[in-house]
Image (cartoon, rainbow, N blue to C red):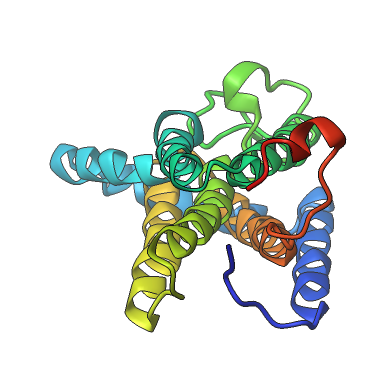
Length: 228
């Protein structure tokens, strides 16, 4: 399995610095007015047909209901073809990686969603926010679209036996991210900066997954019996 990536770590470093800088700016109260203005515009321009369409396309970033099942199907096909436990590694590692990064970040920063009915809902570490609508930063949908479509790309490369063409790469790795970014903001599920932060974080996670030498990762004795 492969999805060629450069050896330089500077893109990951730059994305992490950008994520940290954006987070610090929000904690200090910067860009909150921008987020509120974008949300106000969205709520004032959301006719039912357009909003409904955006809701549907936003499912491209739904991890549990869409991206994970698709990845599991591809994983199953690859396992059936190769009879190798290595086919299961990308899904397993990605699940653990996203569970230990995106989720905890959303809980820690405790930011209310634009639809949350309270004052000052743009602030980080909001003492009045609670429940599902208090996990807005960063956007899970946007980060998921970057990470899981990267894994889907890796699995497809292994299944078809060649690298993706430029058009295939754009359709699989770029278009879904753009669609999810726009619809996540338009539907009011997340602030603009939530989605921008998710781009930085998701980019780093996707790059890390692409750097793993899946065909050469050492396996424990028990698992090595299932390697072909």
